[in-house]
Image (cartoon, rainbow, N blue to C red; front, top):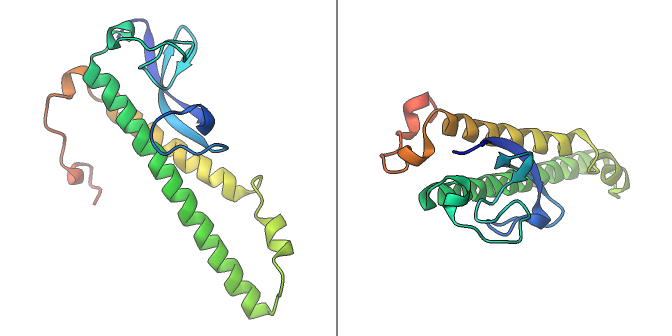
Length: 159
């Protein structure tokens, strides 16, 4: 790869045209740092407006497709995690309110607003998942590795 490196950066969902990104969400994605331009979609140049061939970044089409696939998966994981946390918190709050005889959710809505530790936890887990994906990418030459069979899911002691 020519003069750039892969990084994990936080990207606004409003600017992502793949996966199931949501406006207002921020996703930690694999990006290309090309002369200090953060590129999350290597199908486009640094401006984000002009489509380019994979060779523009010194990549193969398979590599570009893999980055888009990985980022789409990271978006899905973020959305799934956010939904799970929101549903779990909602259920816990309702159970607490029921036990205490609380009839309104006014205090809960202020307690669990977007600037709380719950919001930060979502961001941190998203960043952790993306940095893991980047660590796996850095452990291989992505252009060469795409033609090889992937490692089995249990090879790192996971699952």
